[in-house]
Length: 116
Image (cartoon, rainbow, N blue to C red; front, side):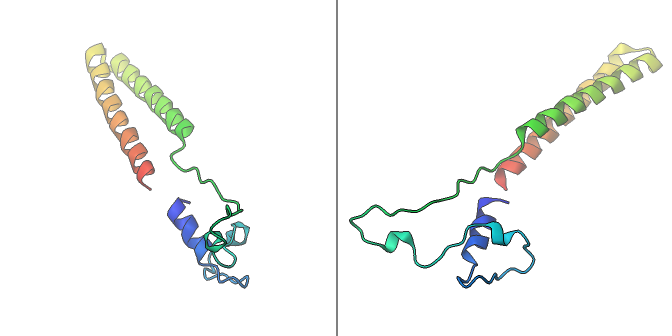
């Protein structure tokens, strides 16, 4: 869940324990805003409160594993083509094209995951 969705669900609580979203089964576990803001207190005092640090972004380990598995599959396909056709140049030329496509695809997925 990105930070915008989290803050939307957190602020849509009506203060009486009821939720405005019936489809969210996990919503009672999220922190709720109760009462007025802590910033509306006495201006001379530092407000005491707690917060939630939201870490979001793509799972880099999974993307690295997907890249490694993709490279392994490309290598095996290139090797099979080179053995069957008996031409190393064509097999690994096709493999180089697949590696370029894999790189562009993984990069696009990474930047898409960073946007959401």
